[in-house]
Image (tube, rainbow, N blue to C red; front, side, top):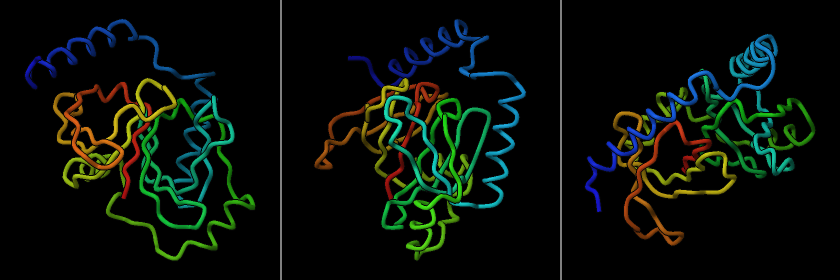
Length: 194
């Protein structure tokens, strides 16, 4: 069994090889004009702090997140999400390229907005602060890899080194179950459960 550094080196080499193969493919769909317009819409919604629905799973078109956009970068969107009772339900970071529908100001959003009693948590207000809190907070996370549509790894992030996430894996009943390593670039969604 390889030690931690060997595992990190193996993943790093694999990541570099895949980067070379995919250098000209970034997963964007459509023209640059459409991508730029969509980016502008998302940034306007983020700035307004408007509650929205985002659909991101092409295989489950009835599944969506309701929340506030807290951060956007070249590839990802960070949302603070709320459940149907208006309770804060944690944070989710996912690939922008997976989003296929954004809804604003609909009846479902209005119902949830009426139920929200606690203000937004401003400790996590960017993608950088999300990663920072994820590592320092010893918080339970659920990670989807390679757009699988499933929780592939569940546990606490122990650290990030050179684009590799080290995770203490947890069973469904919160018992430690070894460690896992994955490339950040392979993460299609990560939920921070608070």
